[in-house]
Length: 259
Image 1: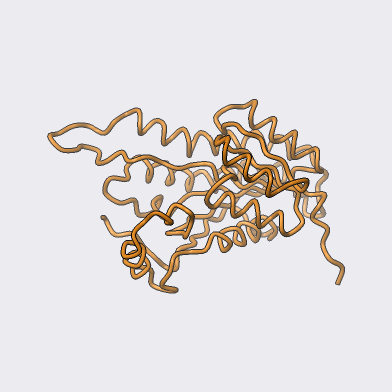
Image 2: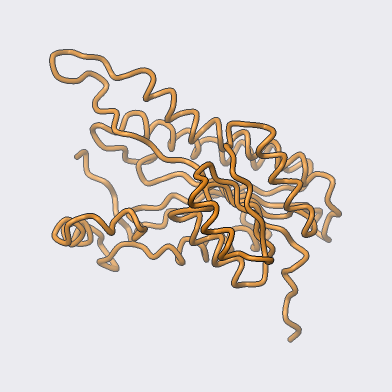
């Protein structure tokens, strides 16, 4: 069997300088892909840039800025056709309940920032990268590219105090099938991953007993998910040409309780 040459296929990963995005960028690079990372953290961009070396490029910018995404697309096209996109950029901040103590309403600015970072940013990434991929040469199936959005288990079972984050991730779940149908006319597939609790560097500062208690809530296997497991699932969703419009849960059968 002849080995697949991945070097002419460029992969763009937003939020690729830390967490699941970083793990995905390094995994795809290890598989021979040319990887372009778009991330807004300058210090982390410098670190991932050194690790990717000449196998990739880093654009320090925001998914909310058209010019930054277009710069990342141009960088990817410098390696070959931009065929694959993983939209990892996202996150949230503590927003609390819809109505908090003393009847205080949820902070509107926090809600808007969370929606912008997760929903608006992913939509902006998808619309601009899909437009760029529409000019690619079609394969025998008519495919010109594929994208993976990143939602969360909180988009299915958001917990008390997660109204902003859960709503944003739920919107991405809803976006996935519509985008897949929309982009079918240009041969671009869209899938999504909904991670549960993943063992990223964010857990390094957490008490061991807190991590152990969370692991005990996962039905099987009783541990946090490995970032490379996320990266491999992204690879499968991108490479399996009959996967389209699907939201894949990666959570060991965990379902979040109300709190």
